[in-house]
Amino acid sequence: MSAEVDALTVVNQLRDLAADPLNRRAIVEDQGCLPGLILFLDHPNPQVVYSALLAVRYLAECRANREKMKGELGMMLSLQNVMQKSTSPGETKLLASEIYEILQSAGKEEAENAEAAAASCRRKAQFFLGSNNKKAKTVVLHIDGLDDSTRRSLCEEALLKIRGVISFTFQMAVKRCVVRIRSDLRAEALGTAINSTKVMMAQQVVKTEDGGELIVPFQEDSAVVVEENTDIPDYLPEDESPSQEQDKAVTRVGSITDGMGWLSTAANFLSRSFYW
Image 1: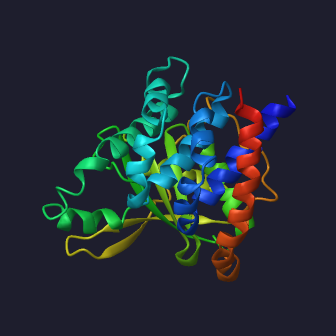
Image 2 (image 1 turned 45 degrees about the horizontal axis):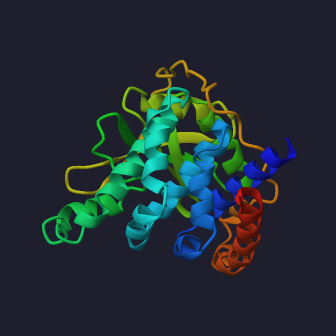
């Protein structure tokens, strides 16, 4: 049991470090962390697998990482296994599928660079790539009251309970949350869940035809029944998570130094846990 708790702690810490763009290259270049994440993809605990997928998804945001990630022993095979495993929750399969598509197309990006210049600019505005996947869509929320790490944790809990939410990231400086959801989930469900906290109010950010942004409030009478997600267990409390203080610029800039020290600890844990 204690080994499982250790695995959860390590993979959640790696996920939080990978959420910071400043740490992504260091994690992939580290000799132990990327192979460890691949091993976590085959873990019997579905929460460990999902958290590992989120970490890999963050790392794939860095274009310079994709070739190395694609070529890492076991990466593509493990993603395929998650996609094909009958016991994998739907959201887990969908997230693994998006990562697989991103890494699979990594080698073609250089050749298509000139042609895709305009499309690339549009993609930069989105957090999650693979948005052409008909089974998923991206919703951007502006959240009044998203002021600190406590509120963010409250928002995380609300979103994790919704069946159909694949993954999300926060932009604390502008009080926004970018959410990747299944195509059959209404954006109003996100608003209902966040508004139910009573301390935050969500509105949807939409693109206008001229490329600008428009903040659209959810209708007061548009509350929808939120189907709770029971496939993926709740995350463990993360009181010591480095991401809890990302809203503070000083801590965020310094996180790469702290992260490097922690990466060494994580690599040692992975070596002890998976050596045979």
